[in-house]
Image 1 (cartoon, one colour):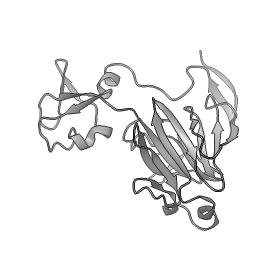
Image 2 (tube, rainbow, N blue to C red; image 1 turned 45 degrees about the horizontal axis):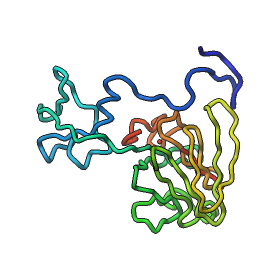
Image 3 (tube, helix red, strand yellow; image 1 turned 90 degrees about the vertical axis):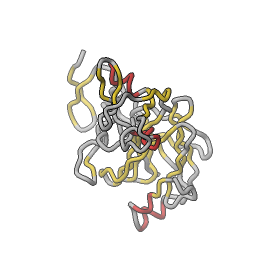
Image 4 (tube, rainbow, N blue to C red; image 1 turned 30 degrees about the vertical axis):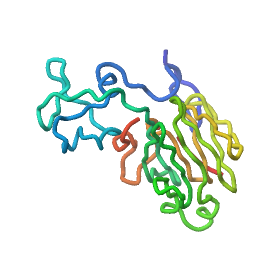
Length: 223
């Protein structure tokens, strides 16, 4: 049952399930599988599109490629993934995905060529407070973990629902911390990482939510 209550910034709607909404129904079943088009160069269901493929079109209960009008091949279960957003001073600056077996280092200029280079979005004293390799995000057994590797520290603003006040947790360097759906990772004041399946602030591109750009399904930073 929904009801009005007091939250950060004014009145909030309370009740219902905490955490971001979860997909359900036939679409959720389709999205849980990897689909392959018989055409190897298909821009929608080729192998390279495994992480962010669209929902297949259904015809008589059979998934169909909308581009080639051919039945799709079931490639098995889709590897777990969590879509994330980098927020700088309240604006979504970048979207990325954390996948099982593919940890991502975030920092000013990570050694990992596949890491998230925050130095491209901040300058001056803010950039200097963020370590070259500041923190590592990884997905392990469906649990999203963050590990601090910085000089100046990483904070997690933890809350069990969007309308509750946050507790600030100073991470211990080198110790993985499990993130909950509404947690925010703070690398430096104004530089945050949050799950992209939440309602966010404004986007650098003008959108009010990153879900339209998130390749799959994602947290926030400060220090």
